[in-house]
Length: 220
Image (cartoon, rainbow, N blue to C red; front, side):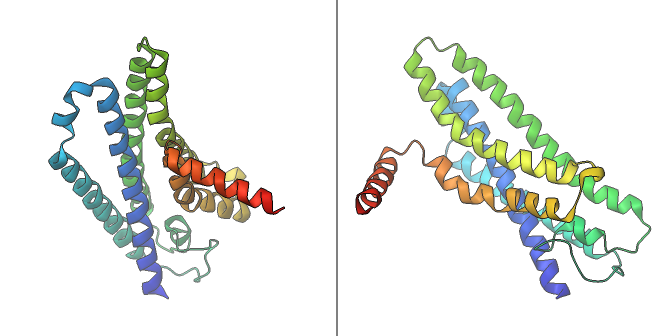
């Protein structure tokens, strides 16, 4: 239904925006812990963490509300069949019969600016992080620093690469099947893999997985 589709667009944009903002905050956490370890308690105390989390959720809410309101304020007259397995903003805009190209571009531009700002911050932070890590004289210290950053970097890379390619790919290579596959990659795969990536450094969890696998092999 129309209302259910609007609710799904809002929730999807809200959670995906919150995920991106959260990944940006986690990048800042890695930056402070590695580049400014003596100031970690001051810069990232409990109050600062609460403020950043609240800012991420509030920004995600406003971004989702803005996009949803603008998308569904456009008249839709090209049927109600979406070439997607869920209500996605670009697919809904294809159904619009409005000639207000400026509004469509403005909707996309706001999201692109937010995403690009977070992307630049993440890249700049990791450049500083890797420069600091390479200056660590102890190999064990470098390994520990890299092991702290690599799970987060893997999640960020998967999330950004699939999202950017899904929305910025040339129209010449666009197809319904490719759009479906890319949507699954950036909306389903990263959340599923998040627990795996973030648990790679948990020795107890790795030991439990090995025991489970060994038990399965013994059965066969």
